[in-house]
Length: 287
Length: 122
Image (cartoon, rainbow over all chains, first blue to last red):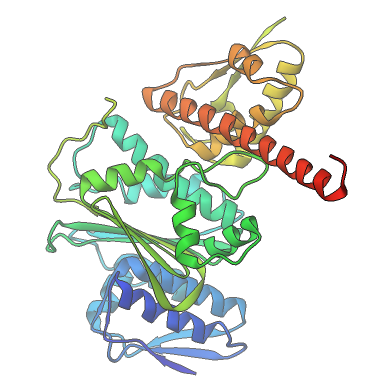
């Protein structure tokens, strides 16, 4: 079975829809070899390797083999630099990340110790030279909130793997660092609908889940995890995008935008965009 | 009445208290000691980062226990060797947990009232 990738895959509505479309084509396949034909693919935002990783996870769980064919050099290079090709295809070719722009691909199994993700974030995300200078307190708050997303995926998603990957774009406006976390567990729409005992639309479910204090947990309190990240993202002039089922929730410049996608994604995607061109020395309002 | 010190670092492997699973034994220890009328000191020495998901289990869940009242928890559980950030999170978790369990209780009462109305008991 051959599936063609489009020519340009970025962290935007079109990019997410393209990959979700590919995921949905793949999830029904069993016991076959899937060839991802990259002949048209000229640009791939490497943080989206997290979503590609999910697609491969699904195919492997259905006993399918995966191959990438006709991959252009620039796409192959970035996937070698961030370790994605090494992880799935044992490609031992070493390509140095000379510009220091990649955040390595990571797939954490549900039974892996959380230390793995902790060390990964410290090393790969907060260790980048051009991250905005921040007070110790703010650095701590950002770490806590990335971890909250990770633990959310484990707790609510009940997934096998959590996939993460990032990429820094120093030549783009605002020098964005994009960091993506994806899981194939129970998604936000399903969790909220089950909790409310009614079928809630995906966008409404995500909006509800993002509100401080709202949680679908019943045996212990919750609903605080993401509140701080939104505060920082607004000050930093960054962005957070959350995709679950056919809903996308975008938080940017203090505003929320929700859009219904063409197709449903059975898991959850969280994409952070941090503005690394931000020269502010941060302290939170209470400091 | 004794004072029991629980070191968070004894339950985690790095300087980050993240995993709710690792928080569960702390919750059990605190619960056991409050019921014995002991004072509990939760020591964050060596811990740089705590997330709400961890504290919700280690501490927030206490506010849902029928056998212990909120005042008893506030008076008998204290924290040492915290940072400003950890103090902020403790405060947030405390406020949120009290609200969470209060809402649950009110929801239960409303459900019971509804059931009684349906059954013709009131």
